[in-house]
Amino acid sequence: MTLNISIDPDDTTAPYEQLRAQISEQAHAGALPVGHKLPTVRGLAEDLGLAANTVAKAYRALDADGVIETRGRNGTFIAAAGDAAERQSAAAAQAYADRARRLGLSRAGALAAVEDALRAAYTK
Image (cartoon, rainbow, N blue to C red; front, side):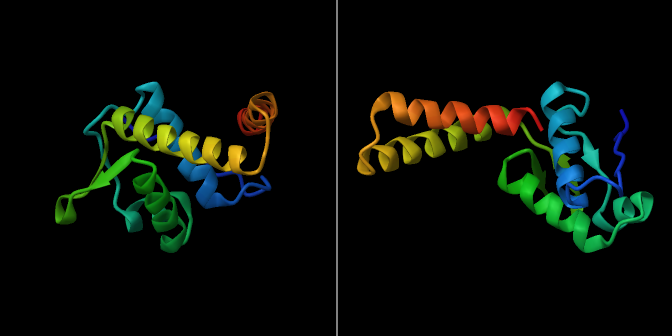
């Protein structure tokens, strides 16, 4: 099992976001199984020709999303993301629903806004 990452310097997407998205997609697709050890920040930065801070920023975002977990000096691993992702998604959905209601949106209007946002997010 190897990490298959390529950073396109001509892409308008920031390198850390390209890295975050590729690791996340590979983890969710099962190409990087739960428990797979990821390279160190410095090691991956060197392999990809990126600054260590760029890789660290991607790792922090992945950790916040529940995709990876850091085990101190033992390293960084692909986490069992399903539960964490589902919990965070449900919490975000609830917060959105509460906010939309407070703003006076109808159920149809709130749902349309979510569908628009999802369409935009998933067609990048």
